[in-house]
Length: 472
Ligand SMILES: C[S@@+](CC[C@H](N)C(=O)[O-])C[C@H]1O[C@@H](n2cnc3c(N)ncnc32)[C@H](O)[C@@H]1O
Image (tube, protein in one colour):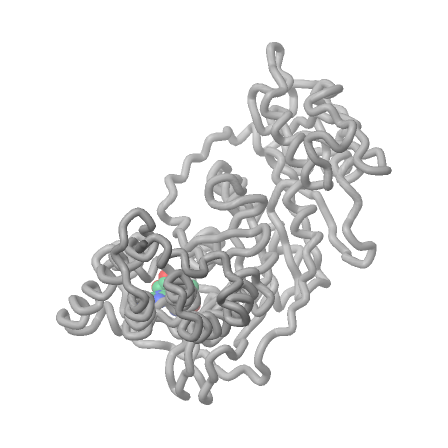
């Protein structure tokens, strides 16, 4: 499985890595000799794709060294151009706080001839560690520009299999993990047809934080897909070997035949420096959280902020209930949900999937109605809604048990009332939306704040009365 969430820089969607086509593009000899390379300056051509180009520039007050991973075949070859390098250059540039005009780095300028680079060389030219107390080691064992970084002291131990650029971003995050509810309001248990799962040992109130965890392992998906199996498994082993034993044991106790299968089955997917379209896809392993089984109508919501995952009760949960999250898009019709779950390698044994056909049909009907109302509420060309349409839309979410998605449903209802100039109802739904969004996206999230703003003064909102004007 692969779960996810969104925040400032990281965006994630539930997409199974299992659905990828695995192509192992690089030859064994190429990859193998890159492991553990010692020399800073091997002759050009010997190191294949493990080459780096570098440039110097000035951002703000400090002179920095920037280097480019030779990830693109058109950099530095006999007739190479620096087109792709420029793009990467720009990314660094932005990352370091520059803008297209504000600093004197000329993109793509003064690139040195590519040279082979050992991990030691990379360490010297990489930006300094974020905090002297951070205790990160790496880069080590770089393969095609993806290296191992470890912090055995942070949050029980974290290993990264990522590029130096992404390592720097991840290392800059504050892994302030408080662990969630203590003692845990759940226990692990074998669940019929699902393997191990988590069950509530007391009643849990909606909004209660269950677990907050830093990742044990973060891996850049592209590298995992490209590497030869032997290289990939060696990287996993080395990343794991650097972790404290209890952390390693927890990772290895996850469901799965081998390391790769464990990562496929249990990881959450997220993106760095962008969304699914432009960002870089990563997988993160959180062994404790991975015990949560799938349900098409889950009672637990999760969000990932700067790689730290937080799981929260999406509704009141009774003692004895299984705690679940959804591995797939809950708005898909039942047949498609089942197909997606099958692609992950198992038959869904959740109550809705296993329930009577008439319940599945009723659920699908509600989902179709939700989709139709959403389109109508978003339609400003034609008037297909009344002030009450948002209420029906939100009520269908409640009826369908889509508790982790009530924030956006209430938001639409609140905005629709504002659009129709109904102050009281807009206020009522905006408060509901703010409460739900505080759980779903965090109390300080922009969405929750926006709804608090609407609730405080609907008349000041930009949507105020806009539908009424359209009606005239
Ligand atoms: C992330 S693991 C969840 C924990 C797992 N049950 C264990 O024993 O560690 C995902 C795996 O659990 C099982 N699983 C999760 N949800 C399920 C469901 N609704 N129905 C059947 N099996 C499920 C599947 O084997 C799936 O590949």
